Length: 317
Image 1 (cartoon, rainbow, N blue to C red):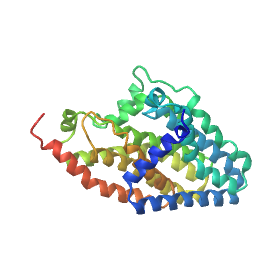
Image 2: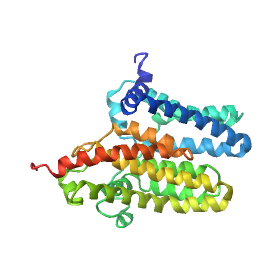
Image 3: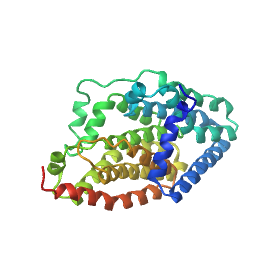
Image 4: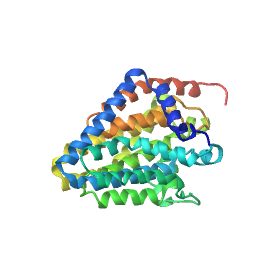
C-alpha cells in the first residue's frame, strides 16, 4: 500500500467538491464548518450534558452512512487499503464535531469519536428478500425511490425512526437520527429509472419534477413531524431549532430529487451526486442556513427541466 493510499478517498472528495462548487461555494462551506464548531462549542459550554448525545448521535449517523454507501463493495475489491482510506474519510468528516467537543472541554466524549475509524472493519448488513411490503403499499408507485429505500434499509430504517421518536425528549440525539434518515432518503435518489418508466410517470418535465419533489417532501414530513413535535414539547425553548432543522431536511431531500434529474441518464447510478448532496447537507443541518441548499435547488431546477425535456421529446425509444 502506497503512502498516498489512506488519503485516496479524501482527495477524490476534494476533486468532486471543486468540480461541483464555484470558489464562493467552497468559501461558504468553510464558513459553515467554522459555524458548526462554534455552535457546538457554545451549546456544550451552556450545558455539558449534551456532549454524550452529540458523540453518540455522530457515531450512529456515520455508521448508517457506512451501511448504505453504494461504492463499498467496489472499494473493497479494487482499492488497496480501502478500509484505511474509508477510516480516514470518516475521521475527516467528524473533525468539526471533534473540534467542538475539545474546545468545550468534553475530552471524555471527544475520545469516543475516533471509534468511527473502526467502522470499515465491521460487517455490513446485506439486504435480501422482499422487505417492508406493508409499508410500501402506502407509497405511490411513482415514488419508486422510497420503495427501494424501504427494501434496502428495513428494518434498520424503521428502528432508527422509532429510536428518534422514543428519545425525542433528549437534546440533539433525535436530530442526528432524523438527519441520518434524511441522508438515506437523499441517497435513494441516485439511481435513475429507465426512460420508459420516466415517460409513464408524467407527461412532461414540469409535472414530473412537481410530483417527485412534492411527494418526497410530504413523505419526509410524515417521518420527521412526530419526532420534531415530540422534541419541541420536551424542550420548548428549542422550537426554532427544530423548525429550522425540519425545513432544512425537507430542502435537502427536494434538492437531491432535482439534482438527480438535472443529471439524469437512463439506468445509470449517479454516484457523483454524493459530493453535492453532502455539501447541501452541511448547510441544511445548521439552523437558518437551509437557504443555501434552497438556492442550489432553484439553480438546478432549470437544468433538470432542460435535461428531462430531451428525454420527453426525443423520438427514439
